[in-house]
Length: 305
Image (cartoon, rainbow, N blue to C red; front, top):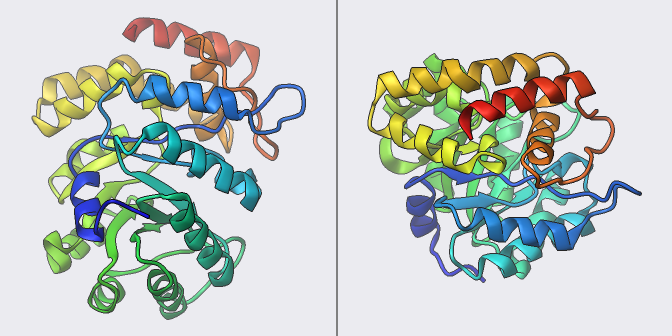
């Protein structure tokens, strides 16, 4: 059971950079490498993140079975020792998402990230009904991920916030600045706002002005000091340092990431391998970086080590 009320959970989540660990797989058969995952979490915990997502998008939630997700979440809860909140994933249709929430509670997670349903389009009132059902199925604080086919506008989000006290977070994966402005203008501090675009660092500074105080950093996996320094520069509105870091590393990194769909995850595992913390391959349908791309990434990482 979570140590936090949903409001306490939301406040902690909004207070600092969020860790988004990858999920380790064995090179031999692509099975979950739990020992390596646990060891890596302990290394990450030596750096000052506010909370962590277990088996999220960067953690290849979409390629894990429900049993594997439960193993990942339980491992994360046990290894954190309650040093920081653990946010478990939920996704798929409503019934499946509720099962994920129930498993998260049983595992001792502190909150839920509600990922988009798979492969189906839905009207906004259908999405709202889905989110409300998930919120009412759990006592945990819920963060809704506005991305892909799970899209809520400020009107539906306000209604949900009124009906669901444990809906405490909004993670933006759309990059629609007008929508983000409308949402923050309407709901203000009722929610904690999280940047959730691929390589969120590129949006961190402008989003800060719209109440988005934190984001989940995939770069934190292999360059935690860089990621934390960048976050603190954003919060301090140190424009010179932010743009220096963008030009030195983040934007060239994105250029590699954008070469192939799915590389937003693959490039993180590549970075882990380069810094000597090999997390194994990605699972299909994703593909690993090529040897030449690995060399390019290694050269980039050498700039910030």
